[in-house]
Length: 282
Image 1 (tube, rainbow, N blue to C red):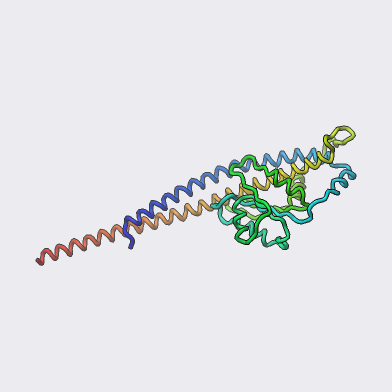
Image 2 (spheres, rainbow, N blue to C red):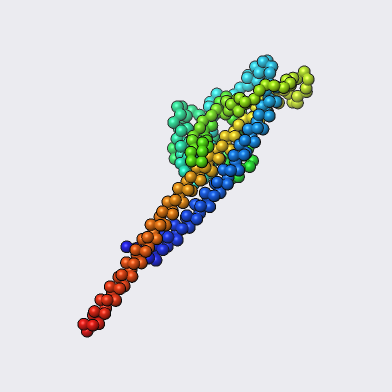
């Protein structure tokens, strides 16, 4: 049996871990409450922008000119992960789901979050480009990534979705289809904006392409926001589980400490009695 002094050190270490996990658990809980409101407000802004866009893009000839743009036929795949660990297995599940897709080896890979770069490296894969996941919940803008994806004809995004505090799933969307999906609740009411009535600088085509890029940016922001929400929930669960295990371990160690102290005390009593017998016989 270990000596009490060593067991006490283990108790102190586990108690420290218990306190740290409790702090992370509380921080994750606060972030969850804050980020939910941002997801709602971002959707509202997108709907306003879509109303303008739908009023602009009405001319079939203009649509044909826009579609003649040369785009990269190779698919692009974006994997949204965290910047580090302490969030359970959700990042591993995202990477595994992406790798399970057919012909994934023919796609250009892009990663948000350094943890995804590490996980892909374990499979011998290197992304074409990686982007850091912002530490805070503000300024989640990936203009550089959107500029890259605008050159592709298709772009799939793998990310975490928040189902509930206890459940986070892996999802996949086509980024360009996501723009349409976000607009499904919109109606095409309002006056059409035509070049006959307005002057567009530098041109109507450029204005429409700019709006499309902005809407893809908002769609990607929505994905990243939901990913961060799921990451916070996953971290909350991971920290809750670690805290619970630390508490159980601390209880077991304290029980072991009590046994060790009793054993040590009993041993000293036995040594004292043995010494007294020897003195008596002498």
